[in-house]
Length: 107
Image (cartoon, helix red, strand yellow):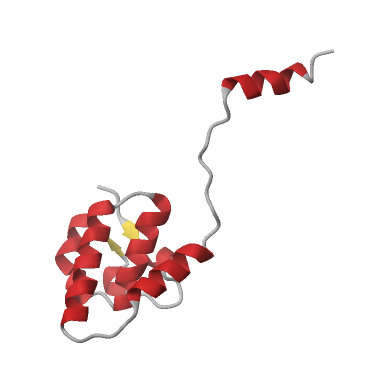
């Protein structure tokens, strides 16, 4: 199973205890993560489109902490940080467009 390097996710403020953990190890230790780190996991999951189960666990933990009285506005933090990321476009041009473009090179 691939390891996640949290230093890459949050280089200015990461916890060395969680530097490289598997997804299952992260789920086991999710209650030890800071609110921002949990929110960053959600941002990463939404941006890249992977680790959806981990993002759900992070959201459940954030929600539980809110119920316990923590007032960190994680929704705003997630939206703001997600919107700061460059947009990724994975669309593939249609074959017709490629053929039309190639016709212009033919003389």
